[in-house]
Structure formats: structure tokens, C-alpha cells
Length: 242
Image (cartoon, rainbow, N blue to C red; front, side, top):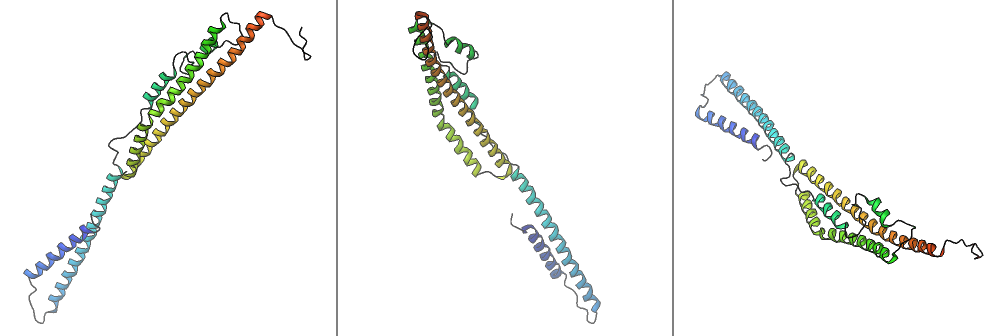
């Protein structure tokens, strides 16, 4: 709507009506009668005042219509809001880290499983079989961490597509409501990315903890078997055992 269009239209209509009225009913000529002209002049002033009032009313209506249109624009929601699939992604990642004989952080009895797998200083009847268990635990845990990174790498394309869509919505947002909704979607996506990052960190910790546990356990079992076979001895600073 153009500025003051409605008011100008109303004014033009009233003026045309006045001109038509004066043309159809011309003022009769009365020689020597000044009061007649005074009356007609007063009536014309009244018409002009009426035109001004109508113009003001038209401007008020136009402003009200503009306010309503502005409220409607700022209240429009986004037709299709987009949110990530973090719940399904995390479920898939939890399944991947639990690979083979790995000590996965998803295990409900992780502390018990770790103590059984790596009991610490204790002898072993079959050191070769025990060493195989420790090394396989470390390898499977590392493989689970790599598979987790690989799965997240495969999700980059979909994550990038989502961000591009959110960028387009942000650039084309109409009014406050759509801008707020785009901001909410971006904040939710950031939270999802942080959750995935936390999971990568946990998978990395799982791999390092299993590797360190396997190394320490191998050395501890070697020492326990040696002490069991040769007997525990104490060595002084001069190298004399007793």
C-alpha cells in the first residue's frame, strides 16, 4: 500500500463531488445581495473542513491496516522446521563402540568387566592365552573408536546439508517469529554437535584406557609369574639380595 493513498483518494472523491454539485446547481446571481455570497462562502469553508476530517480519518485507517500487516508478518512461523537426528545417531554410535571384546563405555557393568579383564598383580597359568585376551581387548576398543570416527565422518554430508538449509532460512526469514525459530534450530544443532563430540572423546578414552590396561596387566602378570616361580626377593642398594 502506497503512503497516504487511501487519504488522497478520499480527498479527491470529495472534491470531485463538490465540483459536480456546484456545476449542477450553480449559485444564482443576486445583484446587490452580499449576504448570499457570504452564505455560499461559509458553506464552501465547511466543505473544506469536512474534506480535512475525512483525510485524517483515512490516514488513521491506513495506519491501522499497516500495523495489522506488520503484526501478521512478524507472527509468521517457519512452515518446516528442521532438527537433527541426534538420538538415532548416538544409538548407532553406542552400538559401534561395543565391538568384540572391547571394554565399551556403554557397558552397564564396566567397572566389574575391567577388573575381571585386568585383575592387576596376579599369576596366570596360561600366560599366552591371557596375553591374547588383553591384546584383543585393546585392539577391539581401538577399532570401536575408529568405527565411531568413521560413522561421524559419514554424517558430515547430512550435517552440512542441514546447516546450508538453516543458513537459507536465516537469510530469508520474514519477521521476528521466523528469525527466532531459525535461531532455535541453530542452537539445537549446536547442542547435537557437542553431544557427538563428547561421544568421540569417550570413544578415544575407551581406546587409550584399554591399551594402557593391557600394557600394565601384561607387566604385572609377568612379575607375578616370576615371583611365583623364583620366589620373591628383596634387593638392597648394593645389589645383594636377601
